[in-house]
Amino acid sequence: MAEQNTKMTIGPVTINYPALFKARKQLNSDKLKYEVDLLISKKSQKELHAEIMKHIQAAYLAGKDSKFKGKKPNEIRDFYNPMRDGDKERDTEEYKGHWFIKAKSDQPPQVVDIKRKPVIDESEIYSGAICYVSVNFYAFSEGGGKGIAAGLNNVLKYKDGKRLSGRPSAESDFADLDIEVNEDTDDFNFGGEEDEEEYDFTG
Image (tube, rainbow, N blue to C red):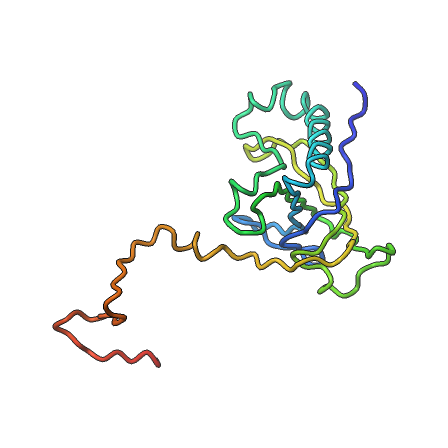
């Protein structure tokens, strides 16, 4: 079998939730990882998306026999594809209209500026910065999970971008909240009509 090309540089992309200088504790685990989300625009970066999918396919082929026993992705239960749909999986504004990839590493990546010089000021790398990110896609089969992961190599900051808040919208937060609107009064009765106890909110 021909050697599969599983390494690529993705960019320019907006990064989100970067933990590039200090490893972050993983959800439901004591493991620490360096990581970052890469946001790929569905509207303007279709070619980049297609190129990434070629490398993901290459990683699958490279691990097809050793990790997946020759099975196809649709034959593997809960097969993990690192290319995620932000519209379906994230309830925040910055993920709307984007695919995203979470790249991780046990080792700290090198983080450089456009002149390939190390970034010393950590505040230069933030959610919303525009970067090129070197990743290596690889097949995994561990802990009951199988799929393709994105290994984080190195990061080049290309330019500044609009800072992202990472917060959900108020509309999404309160969409399921059943509140009766009474336009005749703005009073709230905390204790009931018969018990007008005065509440001390100062502690």
